[in-house]
Image 1 (spheres, rainbow, N blue to C red):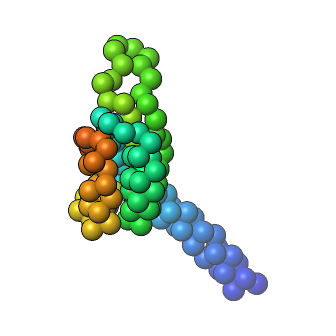
Image 2: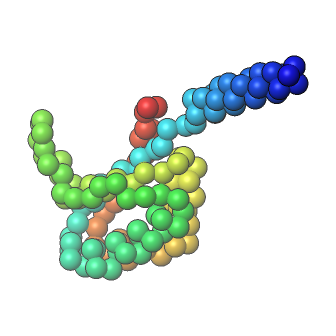
Length: 128
C-alpha cells in the first residue's frame, strides 16, 4: 500500500512540475513580429498578377504568413499617401531579415520594382 501511495504522490508532483515548466516556457516565448510594407503603386493589375504570387511564396517559404493587404483607410488624420499596405506575421525579426535577403524575394522584387516603390519596416508584437 505504501508503494502505491508513493507512486501516486510522485505522479502528482511530476504533473505539477510539468505544468509549471510549460508555463515558464510559454512565458518566455517571444511574441511575433509584423513586417509592414507600404507601396506606391504605378500599375496595380501588373503588381498583383506578377509580383504578389512570387512574393507570397517567398514569405511562406521563410516562415511568414500574410495578415493583411489593401489600400489604407484613414480613421484619424489624413489618408496615407501609399496606395497599398501589406502586413505579414513572422516568428522573429531574424526570419524577416533572412526572407528579405533571400534570392527568392530578391527575384520577386525585381518584378515588383517595375510597378511600385516599397518601404518596409517591422514592428514587434505584444505578449498576450
